[in-house]
Image (spheres, rainbow, N blue to C red):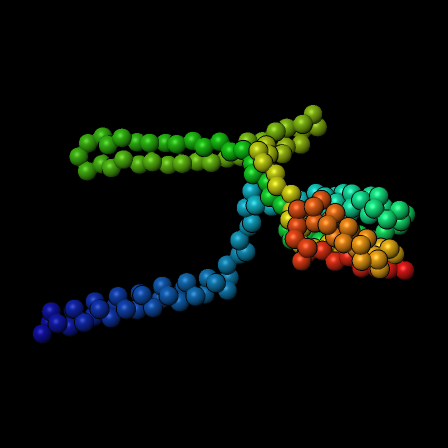
Length: 174
């Protein structure tokens, strides 16, 4: 009978420890910090703003070349900020088994390769940089009331940005 009570007590103790563990996990979701976005997956928003402005200026020149209009309105929206892939240095540590009961251990350490300029500012070495994707384009031209010109503008924008016509709106304006 005494062993039965000890087993029952052990089961109760394990159940209590399990419930405490679950509660700690639940509570950590309230007090946990926010996860950092890996820098490999983001680019600066100032870079995407410059890219957006460059696209809009290029498209304004195209519209002007087609219509002769001096002040067409072109708005480009972007889906994201693009992505950067940074060079990294990986180092491995491998320990061989030395005797009875020992196991091998392997560790991997990764660090970004940094460049330093003359002022001492450091930046990561960029391997690849992708531009933001175009979400949509609006072109407002006073000559877009003409169906032939509207079609030329639509085709030119789609070709220049390599986007479908569903992402482009060409409309007449005053």
